[in-house]
Image (cartoon, rainbow, N blue to C red; front, side, top):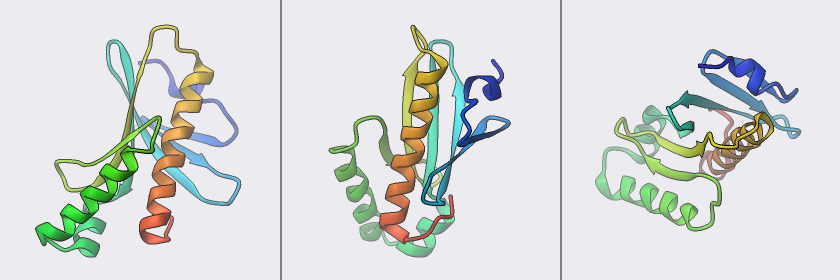
Length: 131
């Protein structure tokens, strides 16, 4: 795997291992994990951890369905990433970026876009800046 610090070298990004913390001008920030696949990069940001989902939406299926529907509605307007409840119960935003012709600048912009989308949804749902 290439060194992510070289690929994501922008001043608003701090790379630690396979994660990048993207800082925004408003003081908020969001972490995105980066996984390399043979033909693509997979970017994933946690909007709400599984623990937060359990605390705020209990284990009631109708509450979780409401959260899943909000994610689905957001997918209707999101252009660069999709939201879903993962197998652990966390609400995540994800994007797959093909490697063919991809520049470091484009990967940087995609990481920013995923972080921004996840942070915005987190702010709408909780008003907090946890992830």
